[in-house]
Length: 485
Image 1 (spheres, rainbow, N blue to C red):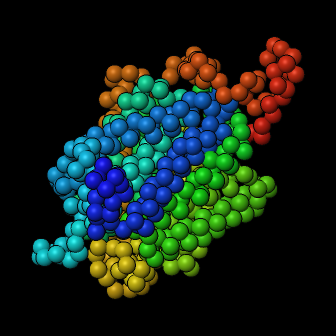
Image 2: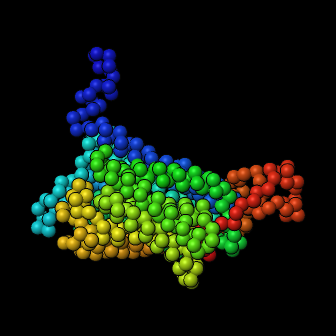
Image 3: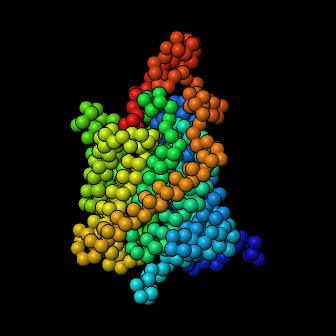
């Protein structure tokens, strides 16, 4: 309290230093909260609704646990491994992000200064006009949603104890590598790979890490693979709505400021997503005769993912093109190729994350290498004169960089995720025992999502052993599965 009786927090010199832009700070905090809402309750509700009834609690809880665990790891060591001082070209130095002096000072990403080949500076390090605490918050919710996306590949059989161990290990040895390499000033950042807001760092990583982990964990129970109806499609739509609307913060927060790039990225995000959903739905009608709500949600997700690496650097017409491809290529890999490939059918990726995030993230990154507009690139990217191959000049090289960057991210995630899974399995089983797989939530947590009988089938007194009216009546759900098995 000052001598005037006004708390220091309300005096400009103390809580609003000259470098603070209140508009940027307010938007960045809002954007971070929108991304956080995508995870909790967004994906918690989506996962809880899209799985078989007996796995609703376990699936939602895996997402909730990951969100909490990432927070503690992030502020204790992982933030600075991702965005701090360089240790090696793929990793920052581990240290806590808990000190008041660090958190209330002006934000600074020290390794993001960009240099020419001769060592001379090209662009200065990123220094947003708000406190470091805002950046720590914003980047934490990105890290958290990545782990939750991986969980989508493992629902319905992974041991919860193994998941509790997996989350901090994967965050430390995989996510921080991708984040520093692409965003934090590492070698892919310096080389000029474009990932506007997470097509590679988040979605490509989650898709291939989830698929790899699914291989090591093993499949669901056979009857769950054969029939896995959503227990509540309306819950799924609620979670999907939080995802779509929350993406305004996901991509709108990418430039670290409330500027024209943020506006462009939000519009592009909605264009691509809407077109992808429409294309996916049309393909379902053409080839399967019915429009699927679950299919529409998948098309929505692939559109959101595909636009993410290029949201702030492509024009509106390019976002439309990306939406067409986002709604068709992942649709083909999930609905056609998956059924024909013995290897893909062997790996039980519960929600098809390899398609909705892995394929869509790779597609978006490569299309960014083709369609990135030079004028928009100059507003955002540290490498001057960047452009996609469509615009000629150095654009052809940009496409090659995008491909090479994707291969690094894929290779690292497959290798490190495999090592982590094998290591965990040496200590605790990755997969639940058969008796728990048979029962589901009640055996794992002693809790069930609904006081209803059955897993989507019509009530049968010979199976359920009680009067249907006493237990809430029938629980009929359309037999829709997320992935072809």
